[in-house]
Length: 408
Image (cartoon, rainbow, N blue to C red; front, side, top):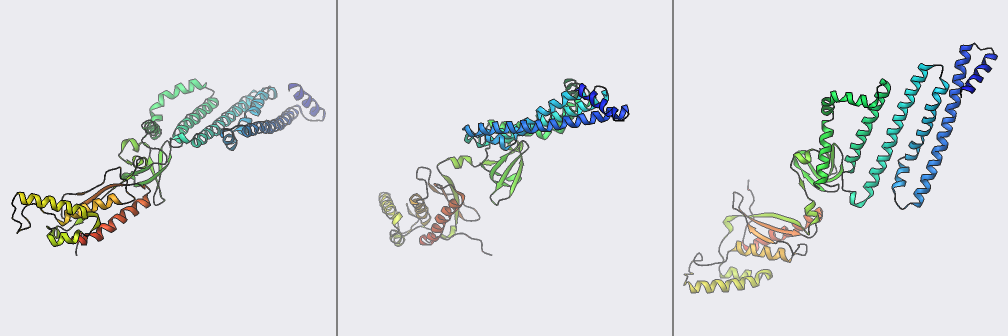
């Protein structure tokens, strides 16, 4: 290249240019020629790499190579080779201009660092998308891990750039950063907390993408759609997005409904309040009337025989209903609810089914249904509960019971 430079200088000098003008003109012409060659090589190398990647992608069964093409990895790799040629050409062009050679070499090195970081960014972006396409990794916080790696890549690129500009070796520059490590930790406090939290969340399997979580502190109630280094995004059921700091998952309490979705049923636990003034013993007329109710006919028959036998043995005075053993309207109603829920087609018969009394209070006597619906989808689950309570609220009047409600 020195030969061509001298020839250009001689040619321009013979054309009447001054030695200085001929020198710089020849350098500019040679730089333009090198740039044209570099752009041409960049185009050729990029085309070759892209064709090779395309052929590999067509023959390969995995989608990783297709994802790398989509992220323009071949193009970013192709930029490295022309930069190497440009860096090697500078000493041969500016051998008589040390300051320009020094400056341009630094510019090429900085560009090389930028293109290297950009290339690694596209590679790790491809890795992230590929891992997200793998079924057993879809629910893992892949974004957090890739973000941590990219933070180190970007920091290394920034430190390397400063080292090149300042003329200090990279390792000496890194050693000097130890004196400001406290400041670095303070600046990246949230990032460090998020990284530690991401690892704990993944290792302890606390949250996966797709989990339904309820986080009252942040007003979140919906599905986890993204787990990043710093935040967890939850799409609420009203289609709003709640952003939660990742470290809050290990520092605060939240509810994960995954156990319910993976189980054989979704729990129904809801109570109906009965006005206590309407609760009473049943006489024979009441029993005759309620014996016509199919679900409890056999139960009433069996129970009345047992009670009659007991009262006869104990010689109980039945002129008052309170004496001895008796059936009550609330007791039969509770049994009716239990039989009705057991017969319901949407209830899982293999899990617990119970109708129970809770502690009486200012709002009456709560009768709670405890069971599990086979359909765990929220909309259908609510329909099942409504269907059950529609029936038992309407049935309460048959047992001469009143539902408690505030009267203003």
